[in-house]
Length: 524
Image (tube, rainbow, N blue to C red):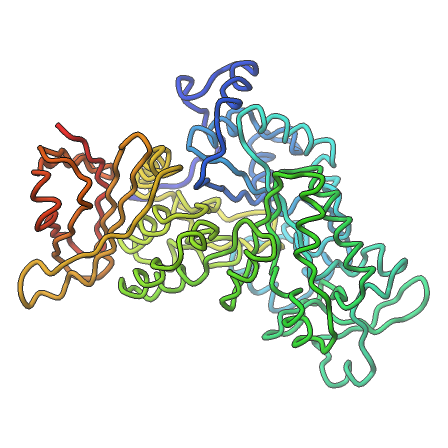
């Protein structure tokens, strides 16, 4: 059922005192005991939207210093290892003016906020004027204090890096105009939505908007020229400076600066950027993490150019098609490749999962996605079933209903993801056989097993289809004989089964459409 959201965000709920130490010394000691998991979880926070809500709660202007310790404790209690703070960097009036006057964007903003005000449109957090923390958020010092509080809880901080473009009022426009892709009068006449005239300290210039080769330019940005070696070195310098303020970066549209993509887009030859950039940062910060937003089946390429994780958009797209077999086939990829994928159901670029999937398909897709190997990537509002995607140009979200049953589901799923077997264990996909001759519904199942180093076992089974389905799934032969108890972690169901039956004919499953089990196996 749904009810109106409380004035206090779920992000601000006070953590259970028993779930987390209550003093700084206790927190620091506990944080030191937490090894980095092989399969971590990340939570994306829309920083400006979050602080707007907090400001309304407290009745005053707030900064990063005002994020409550209780909120950080709650992140840790839920099992998150990484917090990605979206849009913390300084933006300027030039990009904001474009955001407030672009007709298409303004229609989108008005659709999101029926009571839209001009102050709600701050400009895109990706039209960066300076890689310093926005003055309205408290500046670099406030971020440093927040990071210290996060470190006390074992939380790592991720920030944005936008390699492709800068805001129109970035200082480089005056100081280093050669850092940007130039245009000509012919370019402007032929493609006015991809080029613009810019007034600089040294006169008028024709420059290109930042863009994806398949779409028109983003008119609140100017395209950086990766064919210019000094620009590449300048961007590496920016990255090294950013790396001193956080533990990792999510690199926006990271594939756009690959030499082959850049040349195809702009007709300009460029040298490789990412291998030198990632190596340069890690020489100073060895454990620094890089996550690539990447599409067009270039995930493997980005992994081999220094990225720890790459977006797995292919899994997301196949789940949206609502067929189990393509998902299973995708998950047969090399384990080393899968371990370096970031699995998600929504983020600030994608539509809300609650608005895209039916309620039951949503939970089925969540079990498939987040019990796969790799980085588990969650988005603010996902647990509450928010329906409205919030543009990165906006600093306020609409009031929406909270789906209490979905929140309860995610609470259970997050509990499963805190199991050591799922964070550090061994994953394998299991095959399903027909329950009886002529019954092809076994093709609708996706089944995984996780096994921990301590012998703990979890079995996830999903009927990823709109029909009742049956199958037998044979468990691995290393399962010892005897009686095994199967406790469903998503419900209160419990079943006892014989070990020889489980490794012989297999576990019989009969599940309604889009339903799942996540069994913890215990030998009696």
